[in-house]
Length: 241
Image 1 (tube, helix red, strand yellow):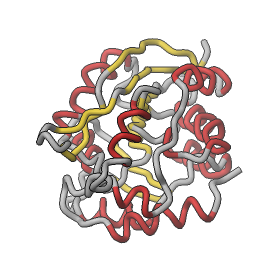
Image 2: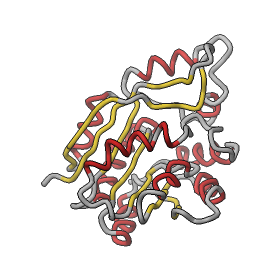
Image 3: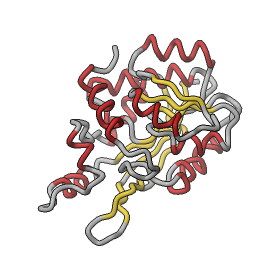
Image 4: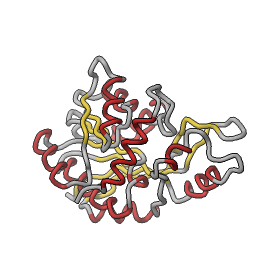
């Protein structure tokens, strides 16, 4: 199974339109507020930190480059070729590698695993943006990439984030400038029940090793000028032992 053409085209359109500057996209917050905080939770759970690190859903590569400063082999992957182009253009020194990957496609993840071997995988805010039917295949693909030795750090919007996003979208003046393109391209964030995340992990053969809550920081501010933070939950998971 792979993602639908409509979904792929929606992301291609979004990233072709997105400005190249860091911070121009809603979720493109500074690494010190995102991957930096996540690594403090993820690294203690990595028995094999020298494994390749895959930034799944890398977008323009802001977090990928941060990870590349800390791990020896980092690969950013994204469904959209336009996103991968942004990432490569922003990384002229080649700190990390970048390529397209449909992580819901069994053949593609198996091919990448055959090339890299087991990997540690960083996934931030991808599951809730998938079509519902793609969510389990995505987690199955992540399990393939993790193999027997790797770990996955998965952070997703909590159910409570839905009310925040609906409130922003229904503002009389319209949604915030950086949220509007998400809706315009037909990739409005979907709600994923908190319990469903754990159900998907279990179905993929992954065991939760650690879990908690941490706000997902955006690059947009509300009418009060304060940075918008979305409730989120994180887990570290590995193959059943």
